[in-house]
Length: 81
Image 1 (tube, helix red, strand yellow):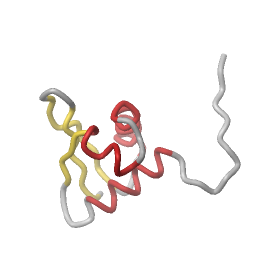
Image 2 (spheres, rainbow, N blue to C red):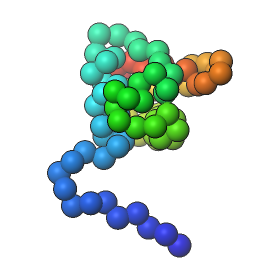
Image 3 (cartoon, rainbow, N blue to C red):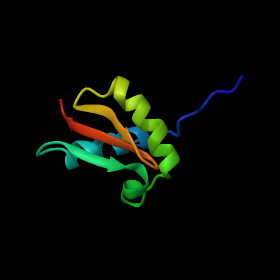
Image 4 (cartoon, rainbow, N blue to C red):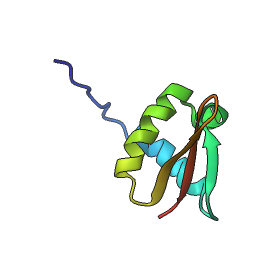
């Protein structure tokens, strides 16, 4: 069994960083995106973003996340809650 140990810094987690980015971008309405197009802006790989989006879909309270469509990569829809 493996456990993940969070570093004891005040730096936000990857999930918190992504959630804050999405909240800011969707502030004025809905946002549609593919992970590969925001990867550089948030400093995460498209694969990391995809995994975190599934988590945010269940846990985020300030944004609503929807897996919107799939054409060569998942398109996500985000809007303020």
